[in-house]
Amino acid sequence: MSAAAAEPGRHSVNGPWLIRGLLLTCAALAAVSLIPLGQETGNDANSWLVWANQLGHGHGINFSVGPSWKPVPVLPLALVSALSGSVAAYAWLWLVRFCALATSVILFDLIRRDWGNVGGAVAALLPLAISPWVTTAISGMSEPVLVAAAAAAALADRDNRPRLALALGVLVGLIRPEAWLLVLIWLGWRLHKGENRRAIILQGAGATALWLTAWFALPALLGGGALQASNRSGELLANGASLSGMFGQWLRVLPPVAWILIPAGIAAVGLRRKTQGGMVGIALLTAAAIWLIEITLLKALGIEQAISRYALPAGIALCALGGISASCLLLSTATTAGASSSWLRPLAISLVALLTVASLVSGWGPSRDSWNNAIVFQNSSNRELSALNKAGGIKTLGGCLPFATSGYPSHARILARRVGVPLQAIGATAPPVGKAITLTSTNPAVGYQPPSPEGVPAPLAQVGDWTVTYYGPPSGC
Image 1 (cartoon, rainbow, N blue to C red):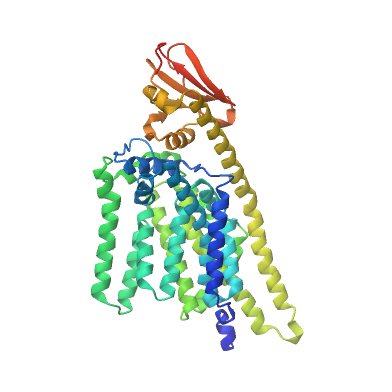
Image 2 (cartoon, helix red, strand yellow):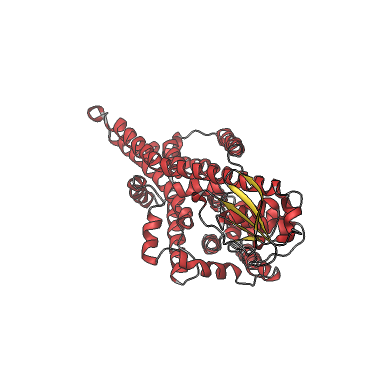
């Protein structure tokens, strides 16, 4: 095999300006996406923003309602929420969508360095075919930030920038604790290579101390208990998939067509394991395997749910291997094609393009449905908020808290965030006697309807399908 063929990355575009331009484009697209859909629609995302707003204004957190504690995004958003809760909500949603797009750019840059532009392009496109990935970006979940930071850490390590890689790894560990083991293994690998032993041990100890403080000490200080995160996950396990069904759920994270590319990528990194590109591929494959083993064990131990988005970091890493596979397919035709077989390379290009496009097409329908559903939910939330404001708003009706709302918990979380009240202030039921407010929708798609409290109902306002009703004495709230 020729030297040029052995190193397909030599034919890559050497373009730091290209990467910067692509990242700026991602930032612009993320900002534009806020125009039609500028509200977080994920329950967890709205809950984190409510907690951040409470912390930002010097209040404690009631952990009796809501998801598991996460140091990131809650702590950074608390600083922004001290200035404006609305700005914090827009900033977080922009960041999530930017990171979802930027992940593709980072994968392109990571893979093209050693495997060529075609491999980088395929690695960049495949995540866009993953419906749960797109859904997390639409709804404001934390996975895009986690994966973008992890991919950037891998790129920094490949470029021999260990301090930046460590900082990004610590950030990932503040989003999900499964990352701790990966970061510590990476530090151990650096020790194995003979790097500064004392510095690496201090880095590992410092990172571990920060993680333990952020994940356990802080929620305990805030009133939720040191094990708040695992306790909340344990309470929700009944809603998760069984251990056997979990594997099928995680395998479906990637479109079936994409799986055709991945085995060849695994074989390629094995054959080139002593090269820079092979080491990058092995690192990605190892990280994906460790991540899946961790979340499987956590599910088996009853600590964590089996949710498809939990497998996304591994799925995105496998997308990179799909890009490596595409590159090797083209490389093999370039080294074997002669005058009598010049049709092999066009055939390989067509096959790679077909598999990539087929993956994108298979993910388009579910991703489009996620977007449309989010728009419908946002519009419903807008009508609910308009009805509440028409009835006098939270300042006038606050004496009747907690409110009950249709569509619990989704409508409760977003309404609590938008009106600036704790999560427990808007729930599934209102006080059965005394003064009470319900917000109900006649749209059956909204789902859950709260029971009516005692007393004569007095409708206060109606906007579209949403009605605000008061129950209680004539004196009002």
